[in-house]
Amino acid sequence: MEIDFHGKYCIVSCMKMNSAKCGLVVIDVQGKLAQLMHEKERLFNNIQVLIRIAKALEIPILWCQQVPQALGPTVESIAALLDGIESIDKSSFSSCGDPGFQKRWKSLNRQQAILCGIETHICVCQTACDLLETGHEVAVIADAVSSRTPENKQIALDRMAAEGAMIYSVEMLLFELLGDARHDKFRELARLIK
Image 1 (cartoon, rainbow, N blue to C red):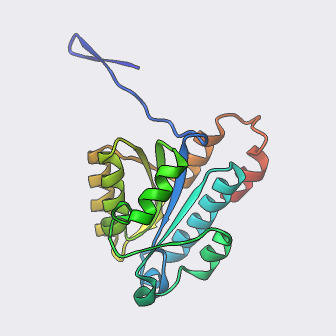
Image 2 (tube, rainbow, N blue to C red):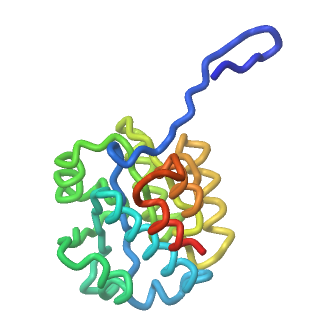
């Protein structure tokens, strides 16, 4: 894509998510803290939709929990969809600060990360910034992340966008991953967002 800036042209690249290049990271949707999130039911539902999309499109999933012995387990409705995937239990706020996460992410050999979870302004933001710093493309799903206050969520979304993350909605991501109404998973997955 070329953009004209007062007679000077520059090339601007547009990141598009590709199911063969990305991995989904579900961050810390746990215990009592999860119950304090702004618009929690919408958050939980959208994370479930993302997990279903990832499974249908064979996108690998990493599932993180922040000190589960203190914060409690992942919300049951989400954990049920992650059955068979081993959680990464961490103490670092950034998922990238955990050696287990680093090893598993590296083994996926994926350039693009899709992030969802809580809290937007702490663990999600720090994970996004660390992934961006190591040259990854990051998509933060705005309606699948939350904080206790909408102000903190918005501040974090603005910061991540300024750092180079792309901000998506679940529906926006889905249709970008599908790319075409003739995709063999179109009907199955389009039903998830109605």
